[in-house]
Image 1 (tube, helix red, strand yellow):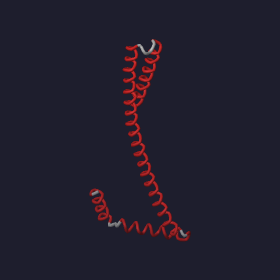
Image 2 (cartoon, rainbow, N blue to C red):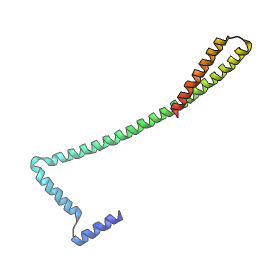
Image 3 (spheres, rainbow, N blue to C red):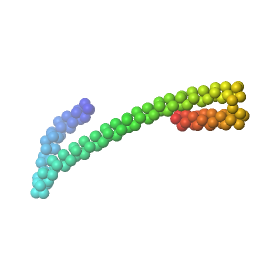
Length: 136
């Protein structure tokens, strides 16, 4: 910023210019050109429309960031819940295996029933591993 100020100072001193005065003259000339068309009444409206448009863009960006944050929080909550559900199902499968060992020891279930029981446990364990792989 200091470099730009220094350059401005050197240019204005060397050429004996006042940039703001020149800008004022140019703007005044522009207003005289558009005055017959009543353009000077349109300029404030265009400026206000520009401010409104920029305000809408800023509000929209803020809304998008807020929605992304909410979405990220929902995803995190869902992942935590899925981990809890997987823990519950794994505990259930472990208990079912204990139940199976007890049924095999006492002879409460036949060979086909025990095989079906093992197949169900293996199928459920495989599905849990697939879900865990998808989450990673």
